[in-house]
Amino acid sequence: MSATILDGRATKDAIFDELRPRVARLAEQGHTPGLATVLVGDDPGSQSYVRAKHNDCAKVGIKSIRKDLPADVSQADVEAVLDELNADPACTGYIVQLPLPKHLDAGPLLERIAPAKDADGLHPISLGRLVLGEEAPLPCTPRGIIELLHRYDVPLNGAQVAVVGRGITVGRPIGLLLTRRSENATVTLCHTGTKDLAAEVHRADVVIAAAGKPHLITADMVKPGAAVLDVGVTRTDAGLAGDVHPDVVQVAGFLSPNPGGVGPMTRAMLLTNVVEAAERNVG
Ligand SMILES: Nc1nc(=O)c2c([nH]1)NC[C@@H]1CN(c3ccc(C(=O)N[C@@H](CCC(=O)O)C(=O)O)cc3)C=[N+]21
Image 1 (tube, protein in one colour):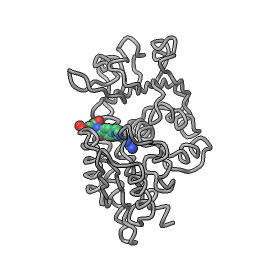
Image 2 (cartoon, rainbow, N blue to C red):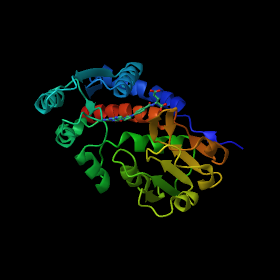
Image 3 (spheres, rainbow, N blue to C red):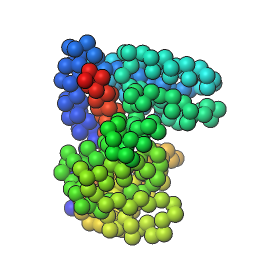
């Protein structure tokens, strides 16, 4: 038996089909949503991600604004660009593409984003609201993971979930979403200090691998029939490697591959956050 593949590309396309009429309605009201990206430097990976986001916008009718800055841009010049976007009515929401070059202080820049324009859902105000259960833009990758599971009818209510990795974009926030009453999962957050990772993973109905360690999750660790989501990705000499060993497909009930799983879902949720922000602005 082989796992059912949780197809992030097809699901992203389905979500785009749902966003298109919402964007058209906003446009008719004179409120076409706009997504801006701030990209510093010429890292090829970051450039290709940003390009994909602008292509996505074109597909659903969202206006997109690119701010590409040189690798040696000053902190003050980035701040000026953020202030400009905060004031620009054509920009509904925006992201600062990470990672930033080392000479920039990322924290104060990310905090400078107007919370109402936080498309990533990673602003301290947004994360604080998530903890408090208040309405806010949600972090895109965790939201994409949950959306993918819902669309394939993978049960979360009462499920035991093992999250592997405590990063700010995925591992740290996803437990907050999964333990809301609407999802009702029980979550264990595993990390490098976890004594028996194999045991924690083995009792899980859902495994979210977001550690950034190639092939960390092996077939023997997975409970037969579990849903496994490969979120981490690492560039190795042999090419891109996910956190999940390829043999897991033989044991899992559902598998979200990398690529083709959570990455496209992250982009779909970014656009969803922008459309929701535009709808909030119209009231
Ligand atoms: N402020 C900020 N927000 C982010 O959301 C953010 C970021 N910075 N920095 C980098 C990471 C990475 N990330 C990805 C999103 C989609 C794919 C994606 O769609 N990947 C495709 C493959 C794309 C390809 O082939 O190049 C897939 O998994 O199938 C990948 C990676 C967002 N990030």
